[in-house]
Length: 422
Ligand code: GLY
Image 1 (cartoon, rainbow, N blue to C red):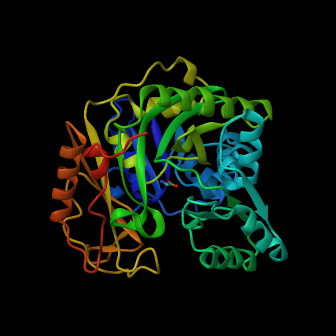
Image 2 (image 1 turned 60 degrees about the horizontal axis):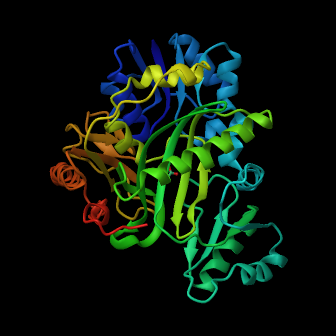
């Protein structure tokens, strides 16, 4: 089977690495890829938001399966076009991708499916903002306003703050830019990401993972696209994991089938494990980054065959997934000034070691690998337990040099020390 992967991040690098371990995968192509993916796949430069370009490339490289990594092409309907061209595709069509593309749609589906989530309100008129902020202000003792961009924002459109002025400024800025704002009640409790391969009503869950969204140690500083992750999640009780699948993901998948927008691809349930049980923070319509890098490092089942089964409507026959024992930790190396405007163009050394996945990297004409984005590398360590996996990830990071770069030193630390309880 020849597989074309669309995207250019560490998530796509991780997908290619796992696909390359599947004996039935005979050829790998990536578009556009990065400086690290060229070792695994033939690279082509296309506009990934253009259905015509993606379909033309899939035909040219004789792909049996197209796997679309990022949300933007999915929300634009690129998967529909690939399927209409008669090529199997892993990724939801435009209708089902609204579960991520429109937070208002996601809330409607969750309400119809009877799934617990934060209460919310859309504000699209600046004149209504202050009254709405008052309705969502932190009640005594609660920490925060949650202000979200009701459109795709690459993880950076969310501000969680107990400072009303900061909440107001973020919301006003979004409204000024013409983006509706979603105000939400704050969900207490640690967060967990559960990725499920979904084919209509059929749901196959992967290992749970936790990601780290704030830029600094101890969850300090602004939100980012993700600074690290670990899997599995030792503090998540098995019955809660099963409840997330059977009471949250399966009802949402069934609701999408009922609405005539069946989901085919990766349904990402971002959960808060609150004192009242699990509640949805958000759904995404694709593999999450950086959790994918940790989760796929532990997958023993053949990924190409799994994604092909979902893409061809035969997931129900696939059988249970096999996992490697132990744990995986991924730590993101970010460029100077990220999540602000990152410094780019610096030479990176040590990035070709095992366990190093590339994101914002490019190869210069002289062959040097240079930074080309905010999140530059994702380093993955595995081991018999979380502490060993953490140690391995940080050991690999030690041998990488990128001027001005930064990373969090506490990825998975509290979980490894048994400090998270639900
Ligand atoms: N891990 C956050 C995301 O992928 O959106």
